Image 1 (cartoon, protein in one colour):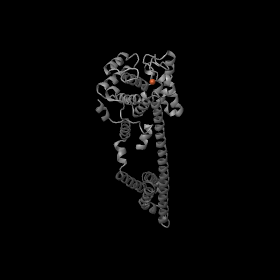
Image 2 (cartoon, rainbow, N blue to C red):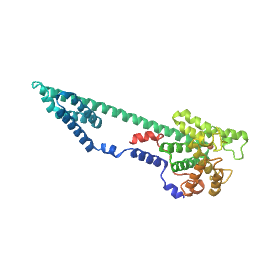
Image 3 (cartoon, rainbow, N blue to C red):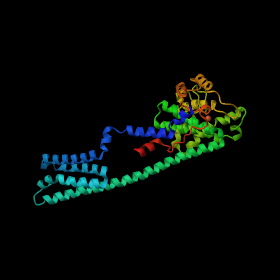
Image 4 (cartoon, rainbow, N blue to C red):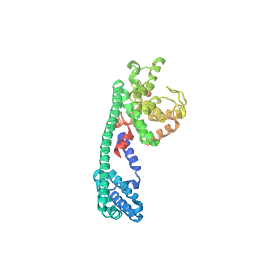
Length: 365
Ligand SMILES: [Fe+2]
């Protein structure tokens, strides 16, 4: 099972793959065709010719139809910037010349045509320049957004490292919870953005334990009721910590806040019931519990997979969302989940480089 799990793609690859596939799938064949230079140039030339023909057949009373050329010139500037705008402006001037020369008194005909052509070229140049400037600003903005997105990712990563140094035991556990939650989310057909949320939430679900005193967190024996109450605070503390970094982390924060809620409403911190619990929390609850049962702890050995699976099944509909349990057990049967007992400590996977898949998608498109 170890070899099989490692052969799977990393979350970063999965997220990138899904995002790129989504971005590409949104492009219709027509959209792709319009991206081809041959199609675009053909379309521009045809549009100029159509404008000229319309002008010719409509007669002198429809002088206003000359303005149709401006739409084509603007489109050329949008597609091909300064050069495209100016060239199509000149082409429009030439195409409109028979009408402009013949429809103007003979002593002004050539002059009027040249002035009009000058306007066409100037409009093409100016709109091309504006388009170029906007494109540069957009590139700068996207670079800043990407940078910001990476900074978020590194901030979250720093939190996980901090937690690992506080509680060594959580290191492999959080990694495996993140990995397995992602697999369950994939099978439940969550959208790409939710998959990344799920992965981060899996990694950070116990980050609130940073605030738990080490003497309680690392206590080998059973906890007193008071100590248990202190431990229980970690779900809310973790969520609040993320929200304090940036309210943008709201969805991840709520996933963390709800990872100890129970399907029957007897969980904490808010006693949510059934589908009131965010899907992320419902998935994490199952994955976290199974992962904890099948991992070694200083005070007990890992439980056999079979026994842990039976406990999950028995708690479906009480402690856990039965649909999530079903998916989890199916994936387990297919060997697609990573357990410490069978596959070792680490999944061999890193954290995603970007925080926000929507930003990534925009940059990639
Ligand atoms: Fe927890």
